[in-house]
Image (cartoon, rainbow over the protein chains, first blue to last red):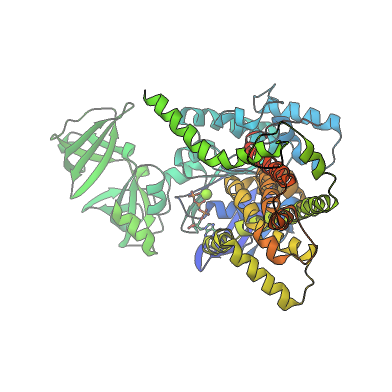
Length: 357
Length: 261
Ligand SMILES: Nc1ncnc2c1ncn2[C@@H]1O[C@H](COP(=O)(O)OP(=O)(O)OP(=O)(O)O)[C@@H](O)[C@H]1O
Ligand SMILES: [Mg+2]
């Protein structure tokens, strides 16, 4: 890991007695692509605004490169923001928009012109200097907003749902563009989204948030494969979250049947939740399975079939490329390394999510 | 058939609305002194008008008050809009309601209240008091035309300017102000027109011997109607008409890119 660039230390923030962030701690490394992921209203934008200097935390500190910048105004910070609704200056040309920050820093005309050309090339919009923002499409405006931010050579770029307003295809295109730009620029990205696929595709590190708390921090793989609690498991993709009992290390009782697993350290006869991804549930002939059940629903999803199987009183969600028709008796197998054990949720909200499933 | 009826209808409305003013205009070019008959075309009354010292002085007062009061009201009104945007929705709605009341209030009530206020404050009546009262009744018009612009603003653009290193002042003047400008201009013209047009409030807040055009016409007419007054009224009408047309056109013509390095 590269060195730590930003530290959020015990950040709390409330609006009108509504707690939005509660003692949030987060470290961001140099050159890292960090994504804040969570449902609407969980405090992602607020976190980003505290980083950018547009909101003051009630308590806690923002450390940037070793110095406390909590009370430093936005115009004095070495970060730039790409706002959700583009926020281009509509009465200025594209070139003027991009030059805005540089003119304030009193850079020379040749320097500014070079930068404009460089930035437009980076975002694939060469020759757009004299267009007005309103004459550009949404995706193009978004690229200009990025160009306008990066010409200032920030150490960190903050992006608040920058692709939120774009259609699916353009969004996927822009995801690759953004990754390319980040690699070319070699700067830190702090990215906000509520789209889990986007987060999994783009990030080095994902910070899953819910109701002002960080639920889990980790690489996309670890977040997906080893969710720490039911909320994360449910939020990141479809999953089967089943109440179970940990009998001993590497052995778990799921719905009355013993399954081998790989997790240790949960204690003996301890209630836990297990997560099994739908693609990890193997359907076999009834007598070969550890559990027996009946297919109750079947949907064709293109790449795979999505099935629901009623077994041991639980509705299992299964993704498989092999078709098992509705009403067919099947057996269920799960490989030990595909069983993810989680501690029982502690707060009521997490409980609510778990019951919902 | 239906179309013709529609045209006739429109024509009739305009006829009733503008017949009195048309009469006035025609009479202002009438060489005969009596209203009853047409004595030929003349600019005589207009030239007489511009030789009349008192009227010229009233004209100067009117313009002075209109320009200053419109300017001051525009500044105050714009600042008020900026401040109100920062407020919570409830306080803003209440404040907008309060600003609108003077516009709906009968002018005579506003006039008399201002007069009583000035008396109780011990102010000397004159140009100063007229100016104060004009600023007062002009502010709502400015707010009314700036506020919609303010609401259309994307609040992130101001933050984006700060983000790019601009100070609050620079961010306001470079980013917010240009977007508000059409509203501010039409607010100014509106205020200017209202000030030019006002009689009742001016009547109650002017001192003896100080006159604006409207109060001057009133005094003159009381003495007996002179054709110069037709000419003067025609001029005021035309000016106000042009200003109102400008106000209505202002928001549409504001897109001129200027690229500077
Ligand atoms: N200026 C504000 N005044 C009052 N409440 C606010 C303010 N800004 C945010 N909030 C509240 O704080 C909570 C978190 O808001 P935030 O904008 O950080 O959510 P978010 O995670 O970005 O959600 P979304 O995905 O919908 O953008 C919300 O409940 C919101 O209503
Ligand atoms: Mg948000």
